[in-house]
Length: 81
Image 1 (cartoon, rainbow, N blue to C red):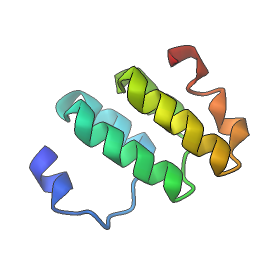
Image 2: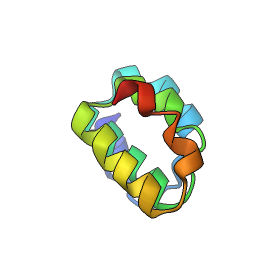
Image 3: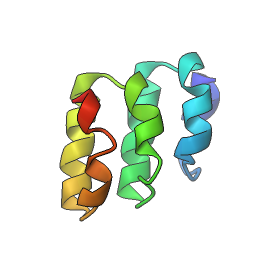
Image 4: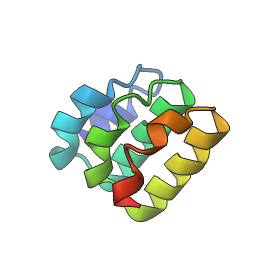
């Protein structure tokens, strides 16, 4: 799955669907996709993915969420920081 995802860099990230695949993807791939989703403004379901992400990615996500003006989404990853 990691290889398939890496070959599709322009795909739109659906975090709800991605959270179902999370156990089968590497933490590196999950981190990249989560950051991509936040950058594209679709961080609504980030809380579903947060338990699978390493702390350093969660901190990057928190920074990006704040920069993108999505502070209302920050509470979804707060418990995992």
